[in-house]
Length: 128
Image (cartoon, rainbow, N blue to C red; front, top):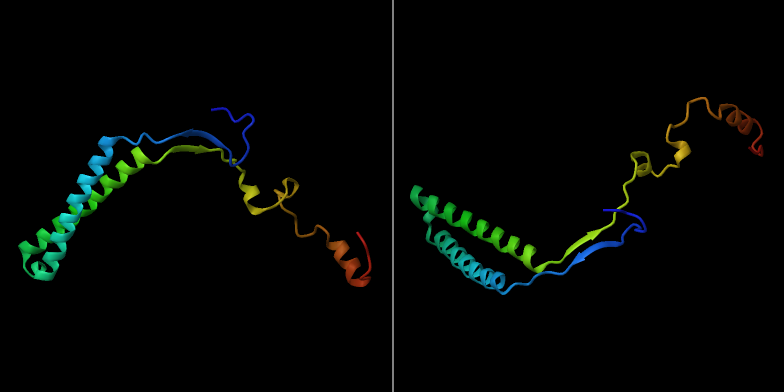
């Protein structure tokens, strides 16, 4: 991966999505399963299954299945239907994050410019 000729923000690699039919069918089927378990969870909440111990476990399991199923749907969508894009980023040194110049990276001491401050206090029109 060479960065010669690449500037910040350039697209370095762009691979279009595969968009397979099998993945689309799998997403549709997983969405149907998702709707069924969301409906089961909502029915369980309305019916008061959470009041006894066994019903509470069923509600927890249904909610876990809902989120795991949603994770599978999202991962399939990301893998099969979103393009693979790599963008060039510029690595900066830590002192550059503070918006200072390179000659300022070591900082200044407390006595730098003290005599100029005294001159400016005595004579306000003094120029450096």
